[in-house]
Amino acid sequence: MDATSLTFVPWASSTNDLVCEDAFASRRTPFAVATFDQRSGRGRQGRTWQNRPGDSLALTYVLRPRIERDQWGWLSLAMALAVQDALEDSVGAAVELKWPNDVLDADGRKLAGILAAVDGERVAVGVGVNLRGGIDAGDPLLANAGTVEAVIGRSPDDGERERIARAICAAMDHWVQRLETRTGADEMASIYRERCVTISRAVHVVDQTGSATIRGTAETVDSVGRLVICAVDGTRTTVTAGDVHLVPDTNERSVGV
Image (cartoon, rainbow, N blue to C red; front, side, top):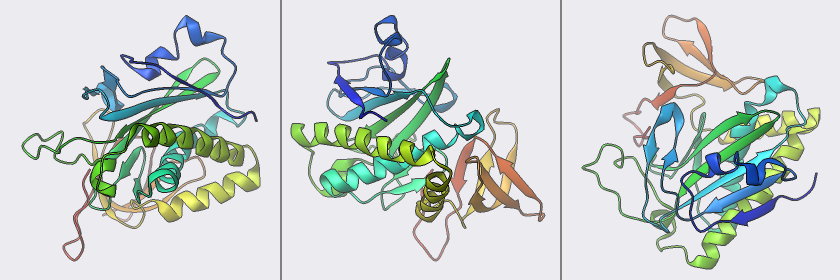
């Protein structure tokens, strides 16, 4: 597997949309596009947001997976591992993983989110990382937002911001290579389960339609990346996607959603 070619652009409406444009249609994979000025960011279930220029990193990593299609769900989880590794290695930021697509700070605030999209035989795995900026507790969308700045106690400089982006690509290359062999995929799955704070926690999950809620204990992540929940009635359910809320333990810190 070749090392990822990373292109920085001055701004983008959405890096996930940008990589689907004609200019990138024939680009050799894997490649990535990044910006520190994304103006119409998009998350799961069509949620959108905007940041001031320089406050966040938006990066989309594009590949043609050499794994079975039923394993593609692991690509988002691989990106979560990559972001965790990159932040630790590049600026010493210790963060946690919440299934399926969130990276949290130690207080449970969402510091990064991941969104994957299929484009023919390609998969575009996008991530938005909050680098700096204040947290407005009066805004419910920002009340659970964390930043790299808050974790490390200072604002990342220009060199560090670029280093984070390059480190994410290098780490993603590593985890994708692991996924391409059975032994490596099993090892990656084990590592993800160890790092994921969702496992063994009481949760309630709202499905993608918003019409159904599952309450129980998150037991594990299965072989195709789904969350396995033991519901309060003792039945086991697998969840492919949804909004996962970690139920606060009164004896521990509260973890945001």
